[in-house]
Image (cartoon, rainbow, N blue to C red; front, side, top):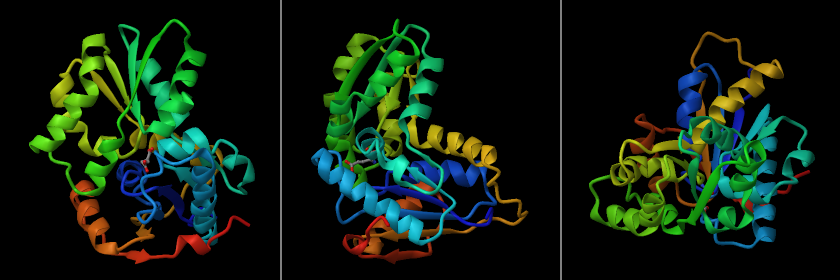
Length: 272
Ligand code: DGL
């Protein structure tokens, strides 16, 4: 069982923020990643469509016999809340690990949350933060253009387009005086440097991909599912659109070559 892969999915490149951390903390694990690049973005779609896509994505990973599923997608984690109950393997989304990290990080009690429109509308992070501590003040802002920037390879902090969009979305939160910002969409940590340059070092950025990977490591250990091998694991990547553009941005972000990328037709997959 333990040599089976960890399954990770997202609407596109964003879930790689979780993969990057998994490779660091659990180098011996095999990872199967699915990025639904043909249907990204999820964040501006209806709840019904997001739920349908989430079931297909998880169904694909189950067909690869994974031992755990990580929905490395703020949108799916916020909207497809019934998904974990339908799965035969342990599951985690990003909301609880990320909200917990933010609650533990804030000093002035002002937490900002940025995510896709669907995530912000769901109030998933906000509700979880206030459930943990109702004295905190929470500010929310949806930032859908960040997803398009990342998917199209606009990820450099020196890029003036990235800087302009960051300022447009975050100027109000800067004025509100937050000291902690949840990057509640897993695409956003890919442009974390630009966000941090704008807000300043005194604002702690909480990376939803990273926090979720750390949480998943605990989950695997709790279920006795850690791979005991002393060799490095392998990562395989699947996408629903062309492999080339994914490979290019994935390599820049992960800082390592991404060799095994295959195309699949996700529309044909169903959750059994
Ligand atoms: N990476 C995703 C998230 O965390 C989704 C972005 C999108 O598809 O809109 O919300």
